[in-house]
Amino acid sequence: MKYNGSSAEKQRSEKIGIREAVIEGISVPVGTSLSDVLYKAEQKMKRSGFHTGSLHFRLYKKSVDARKKEDIRLVYSVLCCVKPGERPLSESALQRAGIKPHVPLSLSLEKGSEPLLHRPLVVGTGPAGLFCAYLLAKEGYRPLLIDRGDNVTDRVAAVDRFVQMGILDTESNIQFGAGGAGTFSDGKLLTRINDPRCAFVLETLRDMGAPEDVTLNAKPHVGTDVLRLVVSNLLDAITAMGGEVLFRCRLDGIKRLPDGSFAALTTRGEFPCGVVVLAPGHSARDTYAMLLKDGYTLIPKPMSVGVRIEHLRRDMDKMLYGDMAGHPDLGAAEYHLSHTKGVRGVYTFCMCPGGEVVAAASEEDTVVVNGMSHRARDMENSNSAVAVSVFPEDYEPVDGSDVLGAIEFQRNIEKAAFVAGGKQYDVPVMTVGDFLGGASEHQLKEPGRVRPSYRGGDHYRVASLACVLPPYVITSLDEGLRAFDKKLHGFAMPEAVLSGAETRTSAPVRILRGEDYCALGHPGIYPCGEGAGYAGGITSAAADGLRIAEAVIAKYKMPD
Image 1: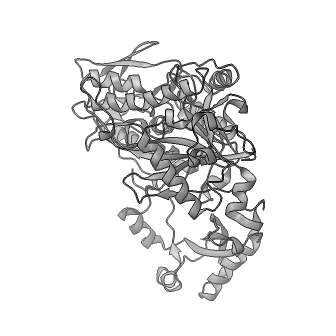
Image 2: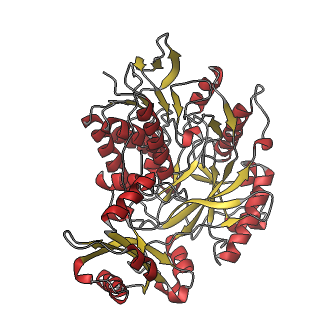
Image 3: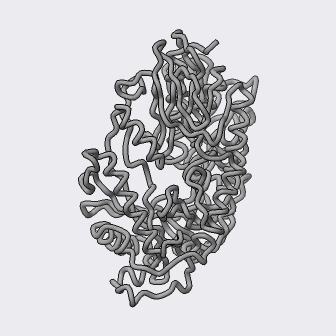
């Protein structure tokens, strides 16, 4: 697959001239109308000697610059397009004016010639599996997409039962089911990888029902309520293009057949497949164990564990936006903080403005927390993970395996949280004031001004998080919270609430793959996405899914 920026695209743009350009860095006060922004872009082109009557202007990107609370700015990029039939823009003139040429995304796939005896199997309907199956279906490969959990509707019902009654379905929950863990999140699409596939992901999400601004905002988000619709639409599109989707279908084994194809052993029977894409998500611990048993190469990788911190949304908005807090152009405030002076990094992760802390356990007798926001981000609290770096040398091997040791490290923390919460899937919480003050168990106070949001707000137990997390994590959290308060005054306010344990920030292991993207020593098996250890977040996982689909398409011709 070739994307814009390739030599072929550059040659094409030189031949036909520049028909689109991006005017960046248009900084305006909060409240400035879009028409005024476009007018500023038009005037810049006019001052640079271009005839603006032949041009069309539209919003390209938008971000908030809140570095100075007394002068918060909106920063825009505007796309300038040559109207049909008009002369293209001069590249040299654009360079002199400091304006970037823009080459639209181009996607062309190279098709392979090796026979594919059966359709591809994609395991997991998270972002990686969804986008891998979507591209395969789009190109006529008719993939079979399976997931151990439920479709969106049944999965929402299973999650609601857990929230309301404490009845956990270990196969369908916040970790497993249609859309993966991201379905019950903020739906944040920001990524720090520089991969043009990300533009394809954002545009596809928009086409499947995400708001237009996911392709415009510098920090786009969908929201769990809208993301559920988007996931359902993606699944429908895969089916409409010849693919098949099966839920409540867990992969339990892979058998290589004499002809080079595979038989997938699942809870719904045995399925023949030409290749297998493994996109199981970061919580498929039994899948990791199965792969280890069958001789796949897995290694532990650095990960993070910690807590969720909750503030009142209005307090957080005030901290970041000052007197501009609440302005409709700004929305609920977001932050990202890090502290790296010690041996271990401490950072905030998966910030959910105007959201809630959710019950994310996938195994019995464990408590796991995560964060979720709706599209409106209008709930009372804002929350974020505060996570501490953990290294492979921090945990003991289990049965001689570092990989199983990594998983058991997470599990032990989750079990400790279950016990500290009273063994009813309630969450252990403590105020930041008690945490930083070193309060003993009998000195802990009930949350007051900031109320926990986990499971509707009435399923928590005040407990010391020192009973849940290792001592070095507690020490690092203490240092991190104090450092964050210096960067964002009020962050460590005594009333803020900590909930534990946050353990599923990323996969604890990586399934090693070679330059051909196949698992080492297992041709035709393609580890993929966050669960395989090659991504972090919705967009980067989806981009890795596309990368794997490209590899399959580049090697094999469509199955008969």
